[in-house]
Length: 149
Length: 149
DNA sequence: TCCTTTATTGATAATGATTCTCATTATTAT
DNA sequence: ATAATAATGAGAATCATTATCAATAAAGGA
Image (spheres, rainbow over the protein chains, first blue to last red):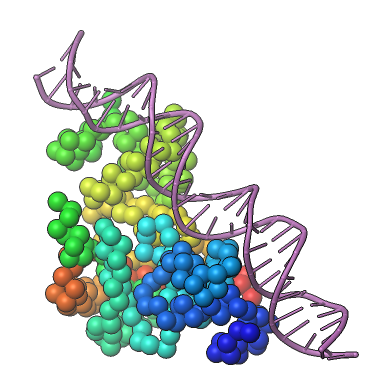
């Protein structure tokens, strides 16, 4: 008896809403941050104890495909997932040492303008159909500045 | 007898310039693009046939640490390496289907201005020491637009 | 409600990229 | 040359992710 919340999105496309999927969406919609598949697996077990890790990966893959979830790769060898809420568009500040990720949404107006220009030029020049972009900053967070040297 | 080209950078820091490392730098400086460790391994074998893949990874890691090489993660589960030449600062246009990566350097002046502003704000707000950024666009390249649906 | 169809699941094996271990080799400073 | 030790190659080990497959459970219709 999965919750009714997400059902609509699925049935349209021939997908089934199931307990495991509902639990994963629950975790994603409640937990903040950029969760790894393992983070999600760990949390989801509390809601749906028998779930397998493969199911988590499969569900995440599906959610990303239909746009319910965004997938990121900040280095470090594992992907991170974020619920694609209607909230503000945002980007990331990533610590190269500990992997911490902070969201930011400063200067979005100016960014949008520039992005549009670049996007228009690149689309035309390289015949790309661009659907997203990332403006991320890398460096050392407060703690890691002390640790490293 | 490794070439003299890169020696300086190493000795200063207590590292040794060796045949394998020189060969890897040779490949990186000549081959264009965003090579995977395996791409590099494949090429380097032509110059230094006995080299092992572990050496490639170790050398790349070192080069990244001392700033000779840049490491990127565009998703797809493997890192990509690029010689950090003195050339123009640039960013990437990535095909989400086939993984192709195209460099671009349009609107860099305007970008630089915006980047500086955001960087200043973020550094102060989150006590980060920012040292780099990425403005990458994702979408479908010409070929993949036809293939996918 | 009970069937039928077929998408989904969990367990586990398999894969692919990267890292680690360790005995051997090669560089560097002396 | 030689000693001290960084670097190497081979292969094992690890980690994240994907594939396989028989068993299970949704969805729609009778």
